[in-house]
Amino acid sequence: MKAYRLLEWQQPARLVEVPVPKPGAGEVLVRIGGAGACHSDISVMEWPKGALPFDVPFTLGHENAGWVEKLGPGAMGFADGDPVAVYGPWGCGTCAACIRGLDNLCERWREPNRPRGGGLGRDGGMAEFMLVPSTRFLVPLRDLDPAAAAPLSDAGLTPYHAIATSLPYLAPGSTAVVIGVGGLGHLAVQILKAVSAARVIAVDIAPERLELARRLGADATAISGPEAAREVIEANGGRKPELVLDFVGNDATLALARRLAKMRGRVVVVGIAAGSLDWGFGKVAQESEWMISSWGSLPELHDVIALAERGLLKPEVTTFPLARVEDAYQALHDGKLGGRAVVVP
Image (cartoon, rainbow, N blue to C red; front, side, top):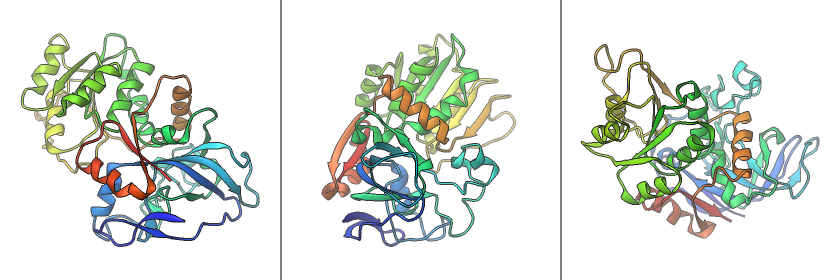
């Protein structure tokens, strides 16, 4: 089968021929219906050897959905042909976090030679088939199309986790700001409207993405730049927002988040653009809470799928055949996509 594999650190991945994997005890082979292309994949390709606790080679693609192709001996709970989403972070299963379903916060994943999951140290979904170590990591899709649902396992789950942990800040009359209306941010707008009573203000550098945000339910928008903080505050009646969600995470967006943060408000940084913040007394709002969010839990993915099944959450998807996987990543790198790029074998 064809697979898009990272063969060397700091080198582009390559589309190569590999054998179809065979499921062992407890494992399951999934025929991929869609694999989302994520900015973090680009980061993985660019980072040097040693930056992550696993080594090459492996197939990219940590945002996956498809159909059960074959169950290994002892694997239970699903049947051949069942449509499924694949939960991405594969924890040890035994630490305190994993026992609670928080594989995204596994206490052992930084140990040497411990892959993060499929597409992150182990073979992911940028291929015709993917081997999943346990049916525990599968979530039924029922009537959802796997190609359209694939982004829910990361681009949907990651903002859901950031928002779910922030719900105490989102009482009626509150405001949430979404910085970056890309693959994750456009779903964050929908999630905020679905699970909270908050007013939503979207910020981005691209007018077409702000138009997408308005179409998806944003109450107001602002172009990212020197005047963004003032425009957001004016759009919010002169008040700073209760919650700021930064889906970029570079120096400029962190600086904007700091200007928007209010006393006893919250800022959640989701983007991994390697920005930094000058931290200290008088430099950030007093008693504001700042959090770096990490993916989401397995129970939360079930919640995300349920929202999608109810029609409350729908990723904007541009599909690419596996033969054009490099075009998908190039379009992502160049910022030419609205929503999510999904590779369909």
